[in-house]
Image (cartoon, rainbow, N blue to C red; front, side, top):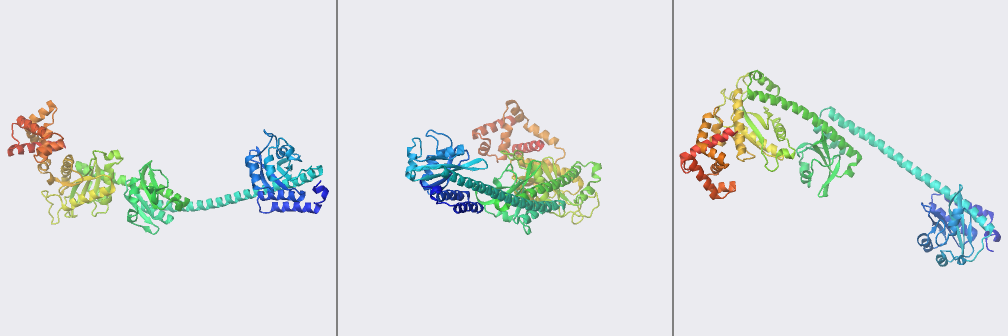
Length: 639
């Protein structure tokens, strides 16, 4: 019988050398898989087997798979592992020797596999070319790690000595395998600890850098440098240009690493304007990356939130990956500091606006107690009431489709903010305040002198009061045009501005305000938008607005139009409206019909009825004059 014990192929020195090779393999940097191949090769060499394999259980402990081999073909290994897996336990075709050895912890041998009727691997055995097989368990620490399975090409009876030698080798191999696994787990643990240590080191560095970011931005807030200071500090931290803009797209501040810049760099960037308009106020907070249509230049943006309202937004070119965690943290912290700065500025502005609003109210109400201090209070706020002023009344144009209020816009406040931005750059400084739904601006005129004492009327450049008969001052009209342009740049709305004649005395302001507000109301009632108007633009209505007591004129209008008014009330008709529209459109029947969405014959019939009721002919100049005056009086009374 050919075996290691009887033929003397293996002496003690060879065995010890094999064990030393296994120990050296364990201590090397090789993989467990290479060690398993070495175990199989050592068994073949020491025991003079044709083929050997090492089978280990899968994670579920349901099958044994060949993980190391010597002499076996790749096809045989695939056939066993994939097509005919060695299931642990008895199956329909019986139990494989390797499975039995793994379960029982004892060697299992078959001297001739062809004689075994329930041997399911006969086909692959024939192709591989073996007839006999022995499987011994790999035992370590009282548990079975797998099996060492060896094959011979001939029929072979495995003696007890041979099985004992193979078991001894298997036990040594099991120790080597267990040691290698422990080494791998140790190396894995060391690697994980090293990664954790590196991560902690990085986190510590991030924390220190984050604290530095917090310190720098907090110092900006403590110094009260405002949003401009936050923008410059953030740009220096990021080494990128940054733009701060309010919720309506108006620039608050812009800076790069070198300091403040203009917003032209952003406006000229590819696709930035369209991208900015497409971002809604309800977009995600925190730092996000967006691109126009999902492509093009990426931009990082972060909302500045105050009392759950997006009050501003930070922009910087580039993607989030380039920013890194510190860059994102810097932007998020800058958003918080900017919110605090905007809250501080808003609080200060609100107080300033309230004081100016109270001053304007007192000036228009003309209460004696308040008027005694109004000039001094104005001076403390930086306004010289000794100088002549024009009253400008600013009102948002109504959008019949989507009113400003429906778009979340507090129009008077936003208009006042735009006017305030313009006013603080003027010398002497205009007085701007909110009055109801209007913004009222007292615009100082060049011909007003500063040579009077408190309570004295302003005088002209030649020492004479400016004449009340004059029209609106050119500089006041120019100021109104500038206000309209400023609002259009800052807001998605337009405004109409009415300009008064110069006020030569403190007592002139109430009448100037009432008249100018009337001019504005009549202008908007006529559907006119985004324009600058003054009293002279209204014709007859402008004259009527200046009457202190228009009661006699109103009685005249009632006498002239009473039959038509009574007819409209009783019949629920619109004769007066048709007449007003007819006059407003140059006595054109066709144009009136177009505006009223009726047939021209209908307009003709209505006008005929008006003539019958009033007993006049609309072709007579005297009748046209009386009716025009009466309609103008009604319009003025309506405001």
